[in-house]
Length: 537
Image (tube, rainbow, N blue to C red; front, side):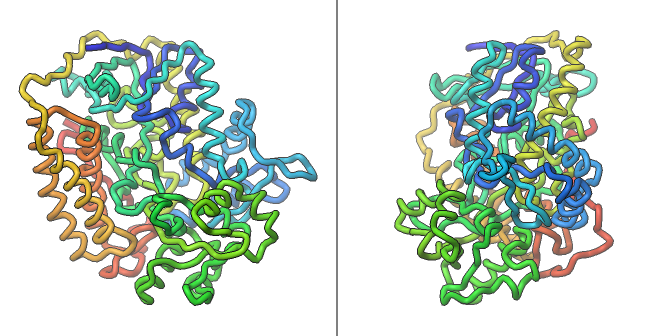
């Protein structure tokens, strides 16, 4: 079995993981794991952009902070919000220096800024309608130019290895991870002085999602099993507008389409958002998603329409070239007709709890990006704050790790035993995995989706407890596969989502329940924290 040793192990190859690796490239040996091809994560698929205050004559730091706090519905940590927003310009300048091709205004050559839901000003820098792809490709290109960064594609982390897991006395410390090489089908040991979770979110827990297949909550589940607290898992963001088409799978119609004048219409062509919020189509995503869900259920409709065809055709094709081409391939010309859209699970606002340097509860373990709960998003993430969070907290974590590397901290003075498969066999019933996978995503959509009730949540809890027992038994007896690893992680994260939702007896932000339809002012600032059984021992 291969045994790898690095100064820093980064689990995840999106904007957060690669940014952190690049900041540390001159400080040590860095391993970056990608569970699939290097571009398979959520960053590559992000369309909208990255928010930052770049023109303080028309915008301000305080305005961006206010907008974020308002979207977060009383649960943002204002320190985290201010820290993130104040480092926005620095993040954009760093990306520009790396070569990210942001769209510029034709007249002034300044960065073209768009406006999205929840923002009071134009402050979203973008690369046409494929910002994530531009950022991801630039980061990968830069990472490949450094001999000190080792990129491991098709390597899926199975579990973290901690001192507690090895039975060592003293404070719990992360020592590395067991990793499944998907090409060789063997489990390898990766030892590292510091480990960073940058695995993204868990939207694949739902039947309909805008995310790629890999968003199975791996880092949240691994962090939980290692001894990390999680917070605010009930706040799952549903993007209001995914294209409704059997072949589109999870194709997102960017928030920027509404930001540039797109209107939401009922099947008969009637606008409806003004009845739900005075901001109309520019209301925060939770309000827009609930409005669409309400109208679909009221009418028994399978979708609503998003229409920007009233804008000039050249405006649409220049601002949204990727969306325009993909829709045209599927038979829709958005310059001439409205697009059928439905809400879909999009972003995990909760996650592994961290401080402003991305420390978790386990020494030597950091979390950055969507896997983390920094306090920035609160009860609802404002559009385009996520890529900003990735870049800002990756830099903060890298600075902390660099100091600790220089001081000699984090040395590993023990070996990690090889992965033990002596007591397991190959499964002859893989249908168990596929069936449980489908059942999990279906009941999460039906019972723990956009609108919840106590009864629905209890039904979901009954089912997830049965599934967890089946999965644990299966995991103990059969040789692991990528599907089994992801199912195990996703089931644990689903349980955390359900537990968190059951404990919040109010409606706030992305958590809306018919049994408690009003916001409870007594819960302002009260996050939902869950601690694993061994936490604090």
